[in-house]
Image 1 (cartoon, rainbow, N blue to C red):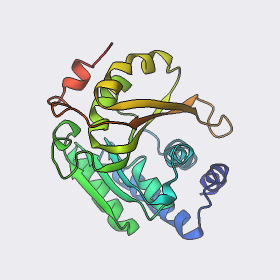
Image 2: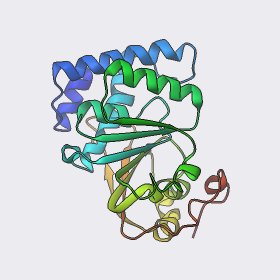
Image 3: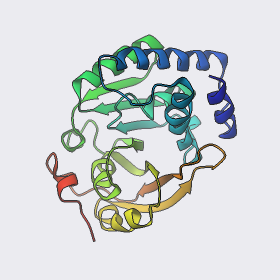
Image 4: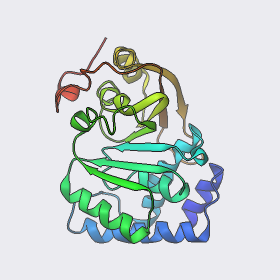
Length: 237
């Protein structure tokens, strides 16, 4: 995990030998399960360290996770970015939300093998779970990586954010048009665009960014709309 260790240090995250061992166990679980469940196309150890583990940790550019926030990771898949952040910042309280039951079984196995504390794993869709009072507007930080376009993503994520919380979307490429198209959805869902952070080219050479949205007022009760609607009919300007 040398590449991960060096990359994390550039993010001012000093991973301990115990944490690096956890990442090694996580990698092995990922590769073993990937033979029977389609979790990721990236399995090379160097690529996993950089494109999955280190990429997940870049959210530390946007938020101080040492403050032990409550985190919701929407559409987590194989656990990115939530599990790497939980390993690096063991004080956080993490909820992983995933709609595919086979991936949920992997997440449960991985969390158990890694001995992660304070992790809740939910099998369901954001459109449904966001209307449950147990989860609605209860999180300091909501994260999503490689799920869908920003106008749709905002509708899935902001209902989980508590007032004063933030939503961080992991993105790649030229985002100007996508950010512009999300303006209506952000305002309607109770958010305000805070910043777009360019991830250091030292770490990645494929133009990665973090879109950070603040939650400034409650989300209207009717959002998110029923499953599938945020993607089929995004709230465009």
